[in-house]
Length: 303
Image (tube, helix red, strand yellow):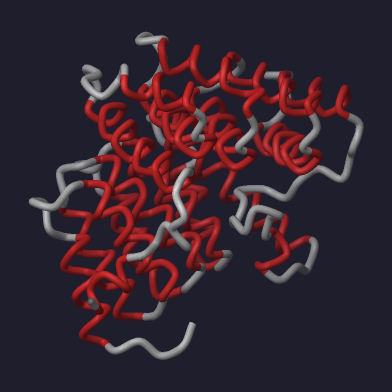
């Protein structure tokens, strides 16, 4: 990205950190800062971890990981260690530390892979395995970039047989790292058969695993996955981390059916689900508009 004036970056940061602004505007500001990158953008994102919205803070951590800038490491370590932060925020901080790819955090991830909160422990276990995989394969960190321009928690499996991948995906005796590898391989195949296999994963394994299944279905943006996502969002007994990710996936798919489903949960009892539906409906609007990009706050602060 070409040079952007510091004042404009700070103005975007002001949008992100203004609790009086609509959450959808703040999300767009966050992703604008992610795309800009650099120390000033990272500092503006750091300020957001004082917010009361667990959903926003979770997304802050996600963006810091996707930026892959070592300047974010100390911020993410503080969030992971902070007992006052919600588990879904701390889990995302652990995943982001893995995404950045710096092996200096291996001892910390090893420590937190034994954490009593399952979502935190499992995330750190996968992040730890990712860093070890990078080391053993002598890989540069960008090798794990997916066809969807995301930094994935694990590499995709080299196997392309859907049946074999589905068996691994649903086998709870396998390591989460291997099951994630199968998940990303199924995503990359992007066939009706592979997407249905992923949909079955929404009823298998831990909350962390199920939430990642929902995330990749959102990346795929295929209508065939709507019934699976709808069923999990409608299940009020389901973990809120999974339901929130299902809502956002429906927002990415953005059909009229998705719009109708999301509107039903705008007053959900779980704050993170309610907020996710707000963000998802904004994504629906974007996907069905002529807007050039979702992260558009730079053009608005310039106006």
